[in-house]
Length: 267
Image (cartoon, rainbow, N blue to C red; front, side, top):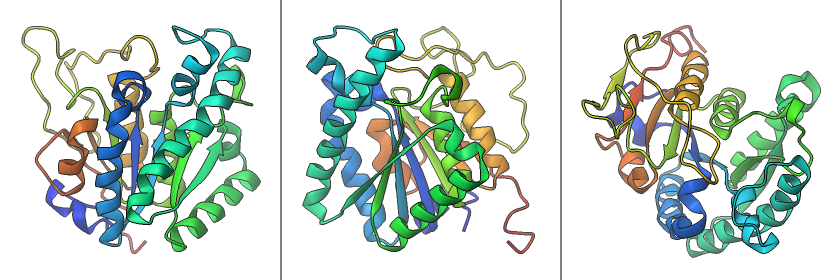
């Protein structure tokens, strides 16, 4: 069922959790363990969990002797090719503690915009979840071009939530919630709740994420939240270290109400 409040989260049937590059690479690579702990706890109580994880390029950069995120497409593709393998290995190594098997799913925007590959992706994801596999989804950066990219994994996560009919989308980053203005500015106030359709008038939403490895900021998360909410999923935006509290119904982050139609219309 689609949770109507944070307290309903433990009862969600199917959830998508998205984590950004800056949260699980470089000096924050140690956050993979606690993230997996929270995902495993949800999995153990019977929830179907999908992880959308950025970080392939950032993880591959040190192995290509790169000090900063490459700007040319070919080097991005090379870094992603090396980093994706290492990233999934790190997740599986941590998931082994719980006897959970991960399945890798790499997508391009074209896969979800055209009927046949979209149907294939949906069927594969549904089957993985039925088999109690934990899908780890990322953009297929090794083959994606500028013309067919999602642009950021917040949007990818929202589209995956829509694809699989998720009840909840959790967007994790290095900021604990959405604020009325960039949180480092004086007067910034945490936004606890966003009603469905609220235009957030007067809210100053920044478009730039943490410099260096990430591509998304508050703007991309709000946009993704609106996509997912329109499809019938509730959305929670919070910080990666708060994921355990988030998935157990804690009063953290910013809550976006789902559209009120999907389940009330007999879906």
